[in-house]
Image (cartoon, rainbow, N blue to C red):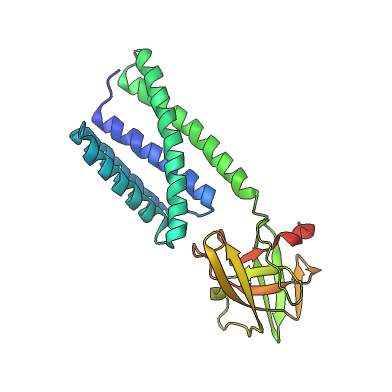
Length: 255
């Protein structure tokens, strides 16, 4: 089966699109359309260079590493090093799976003696089905930790705040003084940071972090009164999966 250069580039761009979308689902970050298009365009450019430079393996390997780094940077923007490496890991992992599927499909189609356009049609259908499967799986993975419709209302002095939160079963942080579970809020949510009267030590895989915290006068989750401590924590990726609030595991009773 012959495969033309333009079809090869298009197929690679579609694969890059599926990989980036699934990667975004897995890390809980939505990719802007413009960034997604530019990243896939860069992937298509690398596929065209691959045809021109093959079989210069060392040069192609170096270009593939640089291309993957810039594709992740373009698609997801600037991140902390730990977050960038995590995103890069998911990108490589999904790319390997996608590459294996496409290579197997290409080998099967080659043995069937199909024309290039017929093979392209079959590959597009397979990519569509695979993309739907991956996106569904990524959404299920994301929903393991996320519980929408959880709203925290609390007051500090005369001010009342209400915001939606992301439920995280891995958030086991406890205020040692009050023994209340700790909800983490991005300090950027407040125009003026509320007064904090305690300091918490939070341990993560990336290391230890000191947080300022306070006890609200009253707090409610979905209208039900709760006892909770508020810790101010800047999210590593700019938000907690699209939210300003990360709720602790102990509030599962409110789900």
